[in-house]
Every structure is written in structure tokens, then in C-alpha cells.
Image (cartoon, rainbow, N blue to C red):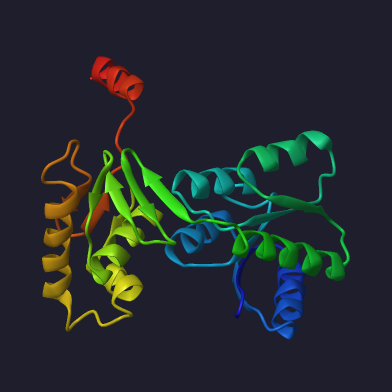
Length: 238
């Protein structure tokens, strides 16, 4: 499988070196030269790895890592930093990064760390998804809500899995088409809406709170239920 990498690095020579070396290893590489464009690329595209410099113009690497994690982007992040202080390394890791490498570095070590992070994420034993009282088992394809088993067709299951892998994200019909219907977007626009309705009838109609919201003009959002403590806090705040 080809590894798609996003390199966010403002030093052009360094970015070119990393890009060329990774492409020689068979990887696909996109480069962003500043924090804003790097953050946008990380949010808008799917990557298997993000190589992130901390000292960037605009937004620094710590801010970018935090925003990506806040947006539920789970892509492994490898930080590059010229500052080898323990404090800076801790800040980077606490922001949501998975590993760090201090400049200057040997390209062989960068490559080894990318491969190690990729192996770790692709071999994770993820067999069960749970949001609130809704549980989806990826092995036996069993779905329950509040302990009640819900019978889903194959496409309904794949649609629910897509939603549960992207909680609190607005998913357009085009995105759902690409992930669930393998890109047949124009032909299946109405079918997507019909399947959303099927899924709502099965997991929302007889349960509270409702999980699937329509965002007018944008798509659908699978909402993470608030915990009782958060409900109280938000009620007081309002």
C-alpha cells in the first residue's frame, strides 16, 4: 500500500530533501510551506503520515497539531524541531504528536521513524467502535444501541461505520459517496439520502438522544452525545 505523506516545512531545501527521499522509497508526498496551508491540507486530505516542523511562519507546529487533533484527525504526526530542549519535545508530544526528531537528522532515521509509526497504526487491533450507547463490532458486524441489537444491511453498516469513524464532522454527500459507495456520487445522490433515512429509523427513531443531524447545504453530522456533566455545564453556560 502506498503511504501518502504530508510534509509541513518552511525551509525549502529541507522540504525538497525530505520529499525527494520519501518519493524514492515509493511514498506519495505533498509539501506545505507554512502553518496555514499545512493545517488546511491536513484537514482536507487523507494522509497516512504528517511530518511537521515546529518553527513555522503563521501557525507553529504545536498549534497545528492541537487543531488537527481537535478536528478528530488521527493521522500519526512526526515532529521535526531544531530545538532539542526537553520542554519543547514535551510541548510537541502533549499537543498530540506521536514522535519527534531533532534537526539535523539522518534521513535513514527519519525513514525508520515514519515506517515504525505507520506499522503501529496499521496493526492496531481496532475491532469495536463505540459512541455513547451505540456500539459497532467490526468482526461480527453486530450493532447495538442501549443494549438492543439493531439489524443493518451491508450498506447501512458501512454508512454507520463511516459516521462513527468521523464523529462531530460534517460529511458531505460527496464524501459519503467516496467512502461508502466508492465514488459513484452523481448517480447515487438520492440513494445516499434514502440510506440516511433508513439508518435514522433504525438507530435514532426509538432512542434518545438523536445522533444523526442534517446540516443544511453541507451534509450530515454524527453527533457525539454530551455526558451528563457536560450537559449541566453547557446548560449553566447558556
